[in-house]
Length: 504
Image (cartoon, rainbow, N blue to C red; front, side, top):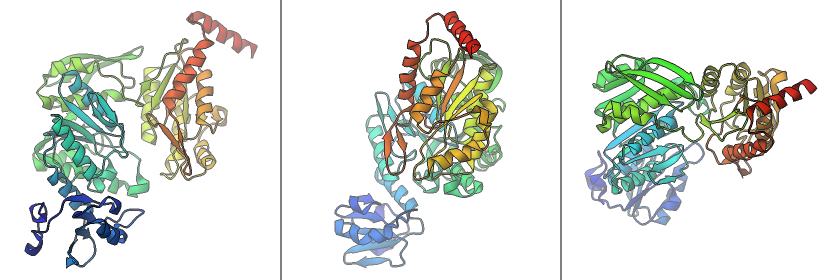
């Protein structure tokens, strides 16, 4: 491949320089590769230039001032190496799916991506989703390291999906990925904005930088006449409306007139939600098993995105009633004989926790709510007391435990959370396994327990060591044990509880 065919603004004398592949890790360099010397938060790629050349790199792109050929190696300068890497990655793997959708925001990304996947899958259309939960196709789910992959890896995946004749791909766009230009060079047909709340400020430092990173998707990466889907009730709606008007994008909005979806009536019936919605002046009835009213917002956004696949809206509504909860997102796990419930949720930010608990309080009013949770180490410390305060507001009992302490002292993390919780409510149990066990065995008839913070994760990170750990497996194991001591007769369980209460 000639570098002049892929890079703009390159000097004429360098255009015929050959290359065979790309790498931003000197270890991965091969003969005639381009090496991108990226300065990261921990490592500076310029320190690995010599190693890359030894491995076979023939082109070096860095921030160094020198441009030219030295010892048959071409040195090029760039102010934004990440952007060049992305644009080049997607140009090389140019055969990619036609309908690309990106979803960004603090909360709800995984649910929207998965709901969209389910809707298209149920309508027998080929589809893939890429994000926190992995790369999902009809018959496969492959785990990945980051929500938004590096451009070399993502370009290969998109090319592979296209070869499988998958033309509909929805991906989560993280603020890190957008700020680091990992999606530059791609053009999206549809972009979805969920919300923006307190998160990732350890990386972005300011809320404005966090917002700017998210809006980059809409300002720079959306196709001409592309579609923006969002919610009129969020503060960022004004920004998105302005971007839409300036660029003549198609704006589809929840809770805002004909072009979106409005809730006309809503009621809870046991675990179900029965809704009447309004779209383009028509009314539709929908019944769903999804727990939490917030999940309706995620479902509606996925439904609006699905409209772009030439599906009639009445068919989309019918398919929506069959959509299941996403792994570790407002997910009811197992069945307990005394009709108490265990909900697994990924909520690990103040807003996500507040949304989770307030939604459960609304749906299961007059029920006791318990929670097992902690906070991650090496992350935004300000949110710990905030999350403690939220748990205290909504929960009758708080089983305070470890999340992913990473390199921090877990006891200090728990102490910061505990400061805003009433002492009478707190059960501090460092072992997450033991905390889940006690919480499940404390459940009486009709109680609701939330296991929050880790959701679908399969490990627990203590910095120096990482344990294999699954909240889901712990929940299922303890439900099985609890059911052994419960009767299949609900009245018998209630009588036993009353007897135990009176004896105490």
